[in-house]
Length: 476
Image 1: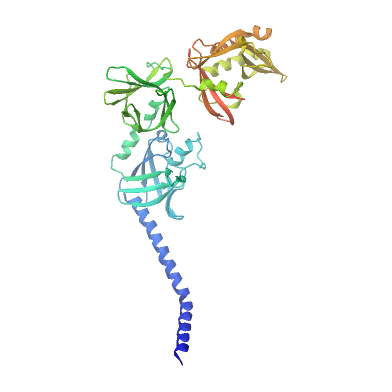
Image 2: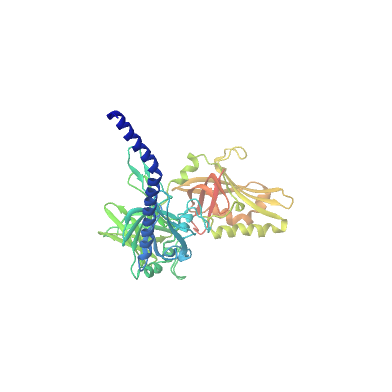
C-alpha cells in the first residue's frame, strides 16, 4: 500500500471514530455545564440564607423616588420575611422566593411583596396583584460575597445615547449583611414620612397653615430664597418650586430618606454654594431645619403662598375657554372636603323641587352667547337635572383678570331672573370664585380621578382667602 492510500485509510478511521464518539462526548459536556449552573444557584441560595440576622437594603426604584429601607431574612424553606419603613409595614408579608436562571442567575419573589407594592404605588394603585410595573425579580451580578450582594432590576432597561453615553442605568439593589439591631432600627422609622405631608400638624393645638415652603436665610436672618414645598408620598420625594435670577421657573424634585429625627435628601438642595441635606424636625414649631455654612434652610407653613408660578398665563396662551367640575367623573385629592361640602348643600337645597346637581361649567372669554363685553367676559354655570331628565341651568356673569399671577373674578350680574332668584343658594360658591385675594391656578397634567382618566388637561383653583377651599377640573 503506498503512502497515499495509507493516509486515506488513517483519515477514514479517524472520521469514523470521531462520529462514533460524538454522542458520548456531548452528554458529558452538557452534564458538566448543568452541574456548574446548579452548583452556582445553590451557592447563591446558601449565601442568602447564611446571614444570621438577614440582609438590609436601601431600595431606590426610580430616579425621582426616595429611599425605602428594607430588612430581608431568607429562610431555608425558600420563604423571605420582609421588614420595611414603607406604608407602616402593612405590606411586609412573608413571600416565597426562588433562585433560578433565565439567561443569568436571578432572584424572584413569587408573591406580592413590599417591592411590588412600592412600584405599584407609582401608578397610584392599591391592588394586591402584580401590575406590569411591579418589581418582583432581580438579576444577580458577579458581586456576591458574604457581606454584600449586588442585584439589578429586571424591569428596568439601560438607556444609552447614540454617542454611547449611559443616560439611565438599571436600578441596583445592594443587599448588605445585617446586624442584630438593623431590623429594629427600620421598624422605628415606620410612619415617619407622615410629618412631611403638606397638611401635617403634630397635635390639635398646632395651627394648620394653608401653605408650606422652604425659606433660606443668611447669618443675619435675611431671606435669600423662598420656594414652594410639596411632598409626594407615592414617590417619597419633595419638590421645591421657585424662580432664579433670570425669572426662569425651576422645580427641583428630590428623593427623601427617612431618619429618626426628620429626613435626608438623597441628593442635596443646593443654592449659591450652600448644600442642604439633613433636615431635622422641630415639633414645637412644626418645621424642618437644615444648616449649611452660615445659612439656614427652614421648611415651614405660612398664610400666603411662598411661590406662585406662571401657570395662570397658560389659560390664554393655550386657548382654554371652557372647564367643567363634575362629581360623577370621580374624586381627586385636589378637591377639598370643604368644597365638596358646598356642593352637597346644593342637593339639599334643591331637593324640594326635585333637581339634582350635575356640574359647574366655566366659560372664559365666550363670544357666541354673551358677546365680547369686557365687563362680563366669564360665565359660571350651575347645572342640574330635574325629575323628568331635563337640564336646568343657573348662569352668572363675571369679569376675569390676571393679577399677581392669580386669576380674579369679579361678580357682574345674574344671567336670568331664575338665576337671580336662586342666587342666595349659590352665594357661597360665587364667593369662592370671587375671592378678594384671587384664585391660585395650577396646571395638573392629564385629567385623572379615582374612576376616570382623560387626555384633556386638568387644573386646580385654590382660594387664597380660604385655602381650605380648592377644586380640580378639566378643560374641554
